[in-house]
Amino acid sequence: MSDFARLLHADGPNAEHAAALQLYGRFVGDWDAEITAHGPDGTKHIAPGEIHFGWVLEGRAVQDVWIIPRPAGAPAFPIAGNWYGTTLRVYDPTMSAWRICWFDPARCVFRQQIGRPRGQDIVQEGSTETGELTRWSFAEITEDSFHWLGEVKPVAAADWRLVVHVKAKRRKN
Image (cartoon, rainbow, N blue to C red; front, side, top):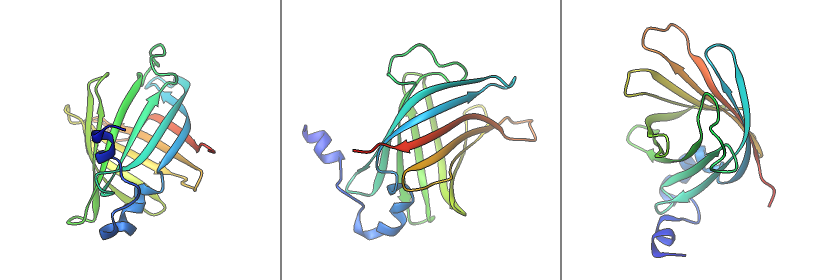
C-alpha cells in the first residue's frame, strides 16, 4: 500500500466522536446495488452497481465510492448517467451534522450537502449550481441493506421528483 493510501485509510472511528460517527460508519464495507433511474416522463431504467464505504482521515470521516452501472465503463446509463465518484462525509460537532461532498469527475457533477438523522433515516440536503434543491436519503436501513433515494426540486416546482432509487445489499465476505 502506498503512503498516500495508508495515511488516508483508517481502521475505525476516531474515539472523540465515535458514537456520532456511526451514523455513516455502519455502512463501512462493500455493497451490491440495483439502481433505478426515473425520468420526468415516467420512464425507468435499471442497472447493477456497487458501493464501497471506508473509514478515512484518522477515523474522522467516512468515504465511499459509487460505481454505476457495473462494470465501470459500461454504456451510458439512461437518465442518471454513469457514476464513478466518491463522497467524503465529515462529522462537524459544531453543528451536530455531517458535511458531505460528492465528486463525480467523469460527469463533472459536484455536490455539497448537510446530512442529519431524521427518525430512522438519514437525510442530506443541498442545492445545485442552478438553484435546484437536492435531497439524498438513506432509508429502510438494516445491517445488511438500505435504500438510497436521490431527489431534486427545481426552483419553480412545488414537489420533489425522484431521480434515482438505489437498493443496496451488503456483500458477504
